[in-house]
Length: 307
Image (cartoon, rainbow, N blue to C red):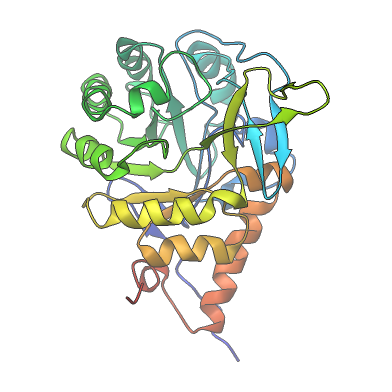
């Protein structure tokens, strides 16, 4: 009979998670919307939809388009704003026994600092994820994340204005993602998460117009997994802080690939939009894999790549 006890707990240094599965920003709402579908407490953590100083209506529709093995989205970081989140959403989710990570973005460097100040001292929030990687906004987002110095400056500013651990989410739409990773590590980032979406577009051949209202959007889903996995591998060779991998993960086997190359945890994104139970099923799949292979601790998998 197989031993059923498996320790899935992972340690990011600044935060312990009951398992390595984190629901990615933009695919899980603010947490309250999905509570009727799954037990969020079973997750290692989840990242809120990106929050700005003031509410934002995002980009004009159409904003989503399905592609072969993926999805283009151009939501444009529509959100309720930091004040509404703290007043209306956080009270609903604060009792969850899982890590609540708040994703933030600003149209200016200073706005990142202002949002960080609003999160200072709020014990129900486990960490901040800095979004400097969204390709679908005209100000901020990826514009900052493609510049190593600005990425570092934003990281320093957020750390200065809040006592929360800081995770920096990187864009793949750069020549050298390793350079950005090194700079945010030097600036004091506690962890790095990658990747955000790849730039893409689609055309309506009958109207001869872009399908997305914003012309272009971000490509996510299984199509980007090989790119995400390689970039995660690259960054892991160059930094010493924890790395959270993600991009195109839809199954436990996908998640295991990222863990094997060395990611401490993984983020599940587009899969949540296809199947609200995706995170739970991936957790169960990893546990069963460990049982079958007689692995008692997930740490024996992390970084076990043989080259």
